[in-house]
Every structure is written in structure tokens, then in C-alpha cells.
Length: 467
Length: 105
Image (cartoon, one colour):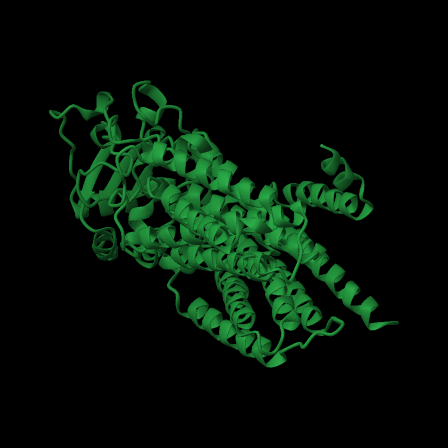
């Protein structure tokens, strides 16, 4: 039993823990255990990295322990403090930090290489460049995604004319320089290497600029996948199979989510990245100005809901903005107490990240079996008395089904119009993210209840209590 | 082309390529049927795993000379960034999953 054997075993166990943990994460009953298993795998591997024998190494353990303690404190405190509604921002920041770490590590390889104290063959140098590129893109991309989600930057503030063409040019220049650096080797020099890193960082920032609003779930998934890949590539630099396995697993998870999100909008990834909705479209038949939406009073809405047999609530980003998840649950409980069967219809791209609505409703203690996915919901809607739409818009737009001229035509939507009555809680008649008028608001079954979602729901709860 | 074939025929590289391919397939297989309910926790859990880069940062510090402050600082930065990602990622995922409860009605 040598030390080396134990170290190798530890890395192997760590990798298996990642795979097993992710496996458990894909079922609600075992997910929490899965997260703990994966976390344990990480701790085992960190201990192995600290303990593994290295010939002639100076170790510098003080630096390592100091950094680990500092990072753990920052991470744990922010994880505890963050509000559930701010979860997309938090995930973006953490994701960006992983990418930043890969950039730092790859850049650290460049100093001794261009300084002449270490040698790298073409393959080795190519790997370092790849780590700089992918890590850089995921770092600045995630940071911009954070700023957008936090509302620090409006979606189109930084958009330059012909932005998509600029992006393509920037990408080609960056890739070209990366290839040049890889082929040229040491004579290229540290300055060019640094310029390459800066270009990668600028590109990451620039490619997220045109993407915003309802496309956020796609870009967050994609960035997640990139961070995983950057970790895997960095693993190649260090010859660590463990990092390779961990990174690739994350890359796969991110890729699957990206594909799922794109499917949920019936759009290709390219279309999302180039910002397919664009300012130009937005037309469609529903935009007729002379149609009038019918309003409903709080009292009527309360009575309709209270005496119905079944109700389905459709939450959207507006629910998150208004932080209305808890009062939503209150209305749910009041109705359930009167024998109304209350469930929730969750569109895959509702909110700003995959599964955003599920997290919010879980925070409000809504049991997850009450949450229906797209197909389940569309089946259930046919036999539902009342639909309450809370801050959702594009995901319930009938134009996606019946108006071929609509920009979102073909996107799978929740067919709320199959239910008997629809109440829409909405701040105003402003169109949704896609900038498309929603004919649902003028539908004969629809009644509008204007106001802030939280405010309207708590007034609704008050009315129901008085019945 | 020659150098590529050489790279491919090297046994260590070949094993790495095998590992890469099988991990990609395994990853897709393991995660492919995740329900909508768990999209966010899966993403943030996976996100925490991408903090494996911290292993590289630890090795970087250990290999550095004790007076090579540039490398030490970069390594320190790397470990801090990686550790925030790891600790924060797992903690926030746990917090979320704690809320996913099945209730009897």
C-alpha cells in the first residue's frame, strides 16, 4: 500500500462520486443525496491534490490553505444569503468563477513557457490556448449574464450596429490568433499570448450582448457547458483524468439543458445566439389596435376561483419579479381548503433559467407533484375550470399555434384556451419579451386583472377569505 | 498529419481519447432524462462540479518556488475562485433541494 496507490484510488472514487451524484440528481427523491455525494467526491479529490506526493515540490501549503478557507467562506456566505428569486444571478456568477479559474491557470502556464523555463509541444500549447479561449468566454459571458439578470444592464444597451457580424469577425480573429500562437510556439511571445486572452474575454462579453430576456435560459445553459469544457481542457494541461471526467460531465449536462431549452422554444441554437426575435418583426395578426381586453373585478375573480372544481396556475417571470411565490401558495391553500384541485403548469423556458419556476414554487413549499410539465399540463388543461396566469406571456401565446406570420410560430406553448375560463394577472398591456402582442388577452374566455402580481394575489386571497 | 498520427498512436494519448469519448457518452446517458423540476438544481450542482479546476490550482501552487510570487498569486487566485465555485455551488444546490419536498395531501 503505497501513498501513490491511495491517491490514485481517491481520484477514482472522486470521479465515480461525480457520476453517481449526477445520476441521483436526476430524480427528485434522491437529488439531495446526489448533491452530497458529488460534494464528497470533490472533497476527497481536494485532499488528494494536497496530499499527492510531488518530487522536489515546495508545496507552499500556507498559500493553499489560506485560499481554500477564503474561497469557502465567500462561497458559503453568498450561498446562504442569496434569495431564491436571485438564483439565476448566483448560478451565473459561480459559473463565471469556474471559467475565470481556468483562465488564470492557463495564463500561468504562459509565463514560464515564453520565459523559456518550460517546454510545451504543439499539442500541449494548443490545449493551453483552448483553455484560455473557452474559460475566457465562459467567464466574461457569465458576468454579463449576471449583470443582465440583476437588471444592472438593459438588454440592448451595449448593442452595436451590425453586432452579429462584428461577433463573427471577432471570433475569427481570435481563433486565427490562437492557431498562429499554437503553430508558432515560443517565438510568438508573451504579449501576443496576452492579447489572445484579452480577445477571448472580449468575445465572451460580446457574444452575450445581443441575447437577453426569455433567451436567458439558453445562454446560461450554454455557459454552464463551456465552463465544464474549460475545466476538462485544464485537466489535460495537468494530466489529470479526474478534472477531465468532472469537466466533461458538466459539459454534457450543460449541453443537454441547452438542447432542451432550444427545443422548448422551437429554435436552433444559432437562431438564439444571433437574436432571432430582433426588433423588426413583432407583427402578426394579434396586433390589431382596436381589440379591447375585458377586465375582471377582484370579487368576481375570487368567486369564480372559489367555486370551481379545478384550477391551474401558470407562473412566469412576472411571478419572480414581484416575488409573489409565497402569496401564490396562500391563494392555492385557500382554494384547496374549499376542495378546488389546484395545480401549476410550468413551461420549460418560463423564467430566466432552466427550472426557475420550480425553484421558486419549491421555496413557497408547493409540493412538486403539483407541478405539471408542458405535455402533462396540456392534457390537464382540457378538463380545467380556471386558469390563472401570473406574469407569463409568450409561453401562453396562441399565435405560436395558429399565426404563421408570428415570430414565435411553432414554439410549443401551454394551451390555456382549452380550459373553461382564463384570468390573466398582468401589470399592463405591454407585450412580453418577444415584443409580440398576445391575442390571448383578447380571447373570449380571458379576463384581465391588472396590477403587480404580488399585490393582486394578496388582494385575491383577502377576497377569498371573505367568501 | 504525421504529428497527428504520432499523437494518436501514443498509448497514453489514446487512453485519454478513450476516456474522453466514454465520459461524454456516460454524461449524456446519466443526465438525459432529467425532469423539468430539477433543471435548476442539476445546473447548479453541475456548476459546482465544474469547480474541479481547483485541483489544477492547488497543483500549481505546490509546484511553484516559494519566492515566485507571480505564480503563487495566480495560484492563490485560482484556488479562491475555484473554491467559491465549489463551496457556493454545492451549498446553494443543497439549499434548493432542501425545499423540494413531497407532501402527502
